[in-house]
Image 1 (cartoon, rainbow, N blue to C red):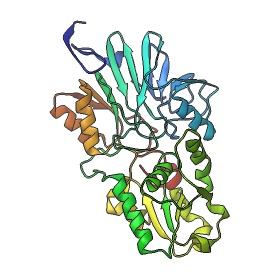
Image 2: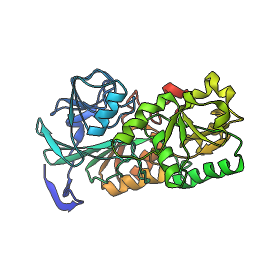
Image 3: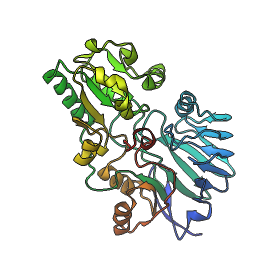
Length: 360
C-alpha cells in the first residue's frame, strides 16, 4: 500500500495508509502470534518458538523448545528453573530476521533483562512493550523509546489514581522509620525478581551500609544480580539470624512470607510492603502494611500516556491491566485503540499466585 512520505524517530517510521498489522500479528489462546516468523511473544502455553520479554513467571514459562530473549532474561529463567530446551541470546539493539520479520529487543526498564520487542515486516513496525516503567532504576537498563506504527502496551496502572512518587523518597521514609524505631525489625515484603534488588540497591545509594537480611526465596536471585555487577552490599540469610540481632535491621522477604511462623519471633516488626498497589490505602490495609512504600516496577498512569504519545503510534493494542481508560485516552487523540484481552498475565508482575493479591 502507498506510504506517506513523512518519517519520524530514529527508525525512520513512515506513516502507513490503511495498513492493519492484525493480518500478520494477532492474539491466540497461546499468546500473541507473529505469523510470518512462526513464533509467539510471552506464550502462556508451551510453544515451539517464543520470544520472552522478561523473567516474571506470567511471561516466562517453562517447556518452550526455543526461546529468544536477552542474555539476562535467559539467566533469570535458569535461576527460576524454567530454562528452555534451546535459548538464543539477543543483546539490546541487535537484530535477527526470522521469516522475513526483523526482530530486535530494546530495554523496557522493568527488571533485569526486560525488553520490548520491535518487529518489522514489509515496512510496518510493531512494538510489544512487555511490562515496562520509565522511572530510573539502578538495577536494570533504562526504558528506551521505540517509534512504531502499532504499540502493544500493558496497562497495569492504567487509571489516574496511580501516580507513583519517586522511589528514592519512599526509601527515605523507610530509613526515617528505622531511625524512629531502632528497637524494631523492619520487614519489607518485596517480590523476588526486580523489586527486592531495587529496594536493596536504593537503600545502598541512600547511605544504608548495614547488612541486609534476606529470605531464602530471594537469595539466589540476589546472587544473580550481584554476578552481573549490581552491587547489593552485604546480604545475610534471614534463616541464620537470631531474633534479637534483627532489632533495627532491614529484612526482605516475599509478601507471602508473613504467614510463616518465624515472623512471631521477630522483635516487634514494622511490616512494610513495596508495591505500586499500596498507592490505594485499602490495598495497603489488605496486605497488613504498617509502612506502605509506593515503589512500582510498572509505568504509572502518566508514564503510560506519555509513552503512547511519544511512540507516534497510529494504533494501540492493550494486553492486560486497566484497559478502558487508556483506550479512551488514545481514541481522543485519533489513535485506533482496542483491548487484546490476553488471558494469563497478572495485573502486576506475577505475585497474585504467590501473595494472593498481586504486587507491581
